[in-house]
Image 1 (tube, rainbow, N blue to C red):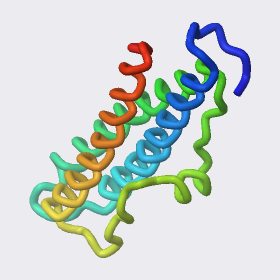
Image 2: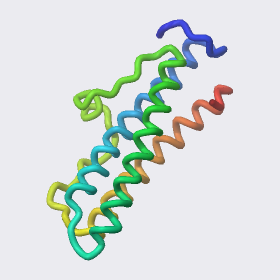
Image 3: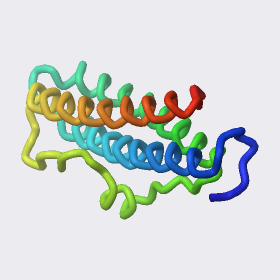
Image 4: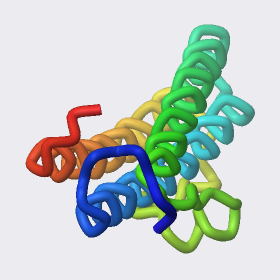
Length: 133
């Protein structure tokens, strides 16, 4: 850990940053899976889902950036290369054969819920340590 202006003990900052890096890996993986759905969606819902998936991906990219920056502010290094993400992500692999709109929706819904589970756990850890940022 690097020195930080965040007024928490180093061990606490390390724990929170570890949780943030885990959520970052999940978020980066989820972003790539949403983009796969965006690129490959077919069927009668194409027009609406194509735009919806792009909006989700854009919003998640901004959220991932915030998570990474908070980990760094705590004194950690944000970990997020494609190889690091693949190794650390807790999300299921995206089904490569998925093409139809509602199949993509179902696959993404499962992965979003897994992502949110990790995010909630990280938030709980941080809040218990007095870090509500």
